[in-house]
Length: 78
Ligand code: FES
Image (cartoon, rainbow, N blue to C red; front, top):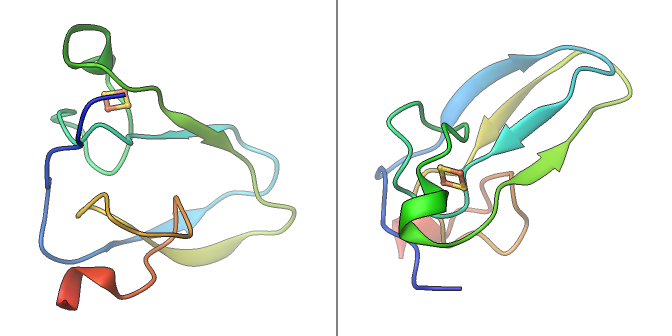
């Protein structure tokens, strides 16, 4: 996998729905951040598909350097 592109400087808050499948962009090239739009097929990388067991607000990483994808771990501040 190639080095991800930094897509943003702070996380995006999203209201996640229970049992819905989400695809978080790991390559950073999606124009639909923080979600995958298929740009990885050209740029390299694969999305991380995830669900949540209950509705919740989450902060999804856009710097693509988090160690807890798809969630922000504060790395963007470094
Ligand atoms: S567009 Fe980035 S992982 Fe799909």
